[in-house]
Length: 170
Image 1 (cartoon, rainbow, N blue to C red):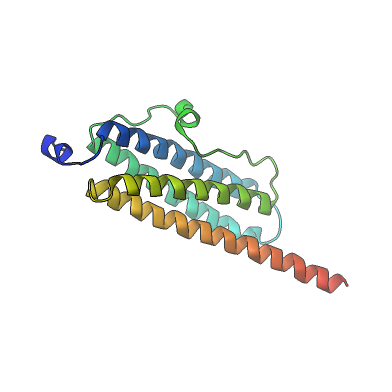
Image 2: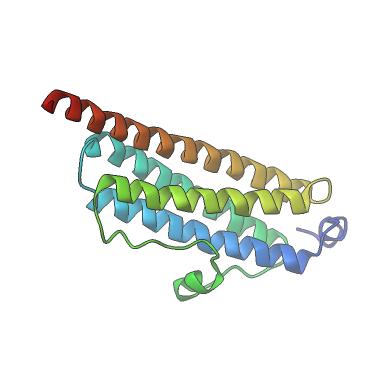
């Protein structure tokens, strides 16, 4: 981004780059959490949920690409080493030590809710001031809201399945 482009942004660019680097770290962690969770997951509906988690993982990777491009456009330096992801991220990475599908989904749900908070913060910060970052953050926010709904639906479906099994056993 050129000098004039940065000059017309009505926010503290250094603070914005810091916010975006946090988001970048969180996207990489979310990508890995989805990807590895899909691979180790066990339990009912696994065959239906696994491919969707891998789609979510790829979407998180796409978000990371958007964010890193924006950091560079703003004249910033993106996080350069994976060792720094945990340092920058405010969203937790949950190790999928319990591979049961509901646990994996709950971990991803927590991550999505944190991402929603992150991108709302960026969208609010840039609203009416930095149109490019605002548009990007709103686009990603919408994706994260959709991911949250998908996960909530899967959890409800699994709960319903468990209820139906209990009824059959009675």
